[in-house]
Length: 150
Length: 350
Image 1 (cartoon, each protein chain N blue to C red):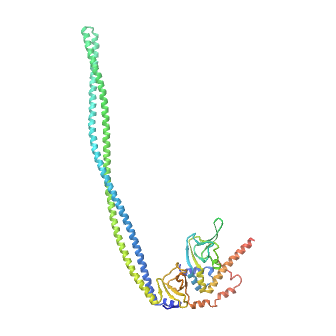
Image 2: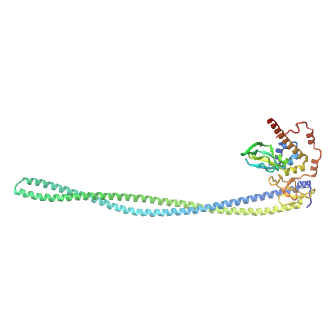
């Protein structure tokens, strides 16, 4: 996958809203292409997180361990993303992600995000704002559901 | 080797001298890869054909052995056939003798039956004459009757002897006829075995010729395959020589690159010390590489790296002027973000 194709894929993701063309171009260089066969694990619950992923092709499922096995929390497809929480809190992965079908993912590591931050401070701010928006949106959704149950 | 800025490196990459050098670099690398692939392919083919030749020769050896076995079988069948033929003549001769014996027994029985019939007839006549003589009470009549009675007694004894002889002759005839039948069955069995052995001999002989012909064909193929192996190995050797020549050309091009562009050039990257950072270096990959580094590198792009870490961690290189414009406090996006009304700044789609 060439850099231009990656750039076009990233431009579709809400994580990179408001980024300038040259910021997107550098991000496209910093994202590595990773390919997974169906059922292959991208990362496991409990591992230290060091990267976020944008789905370029295929689908992944997010699963959590239960008493008897695994429960699927969500299924994601292109151009959705996952793993962004670990870029903010540097905590352990809260769920396991595995490929549902043959999947092509774009991976941005902490180290490469640091390169981006050094080169594009404002662009980095926007990436962080966008991640905060995602987390904020999810928190609102959880609050709403909690209120309905109460 | 003097230090360079990002812009200076970009200027080098834009010169005609670099373009010409890079074109030759790519051509020689492509030629080396082509020669390498060709040599690998030729050696692979040579190994395959050698393996096939060995296998073909092994099969040919096995076929030759099988042809010998068929020849042995044919020879054994021929010997068996000859022996059965001899035996069959003996059995046939014995049968002919037995047939004569059976005929003799039949004739003998007929002769004895005739004698028995004649004796019975004579006895019957004597009995009639004795009855007639006993009716005459004269002395001559009595004497005649006595004489006839003696004669009748003699004849009856003879008839009894003939009857016994006929009985024995009939038994002998049956015995000889049975023996004749047994010998005829033996003759037929011998002829049947002789036929089978003769057919087996000819078929084994035919099989031997077929298998030997196959074996010769396989030997010829094996020889042809070995000639092909020699040819392929010769071509692989020539490809190796061509590779050595190309390697010399490649080394000369690398040396020319080092001198012309005043850089360090190991194989696929040009390196210069960074003018603006003593701990950093600038590098330019000469090939695309998407998997082996922390980022996807593209040929003829400028990258920055820490001297201590080298290629283990690469960053896209940016000029000082580019960095200054990014850090300038003139980005309208933040202003727009903070000026936005309720709900707008927080809107996000996932």
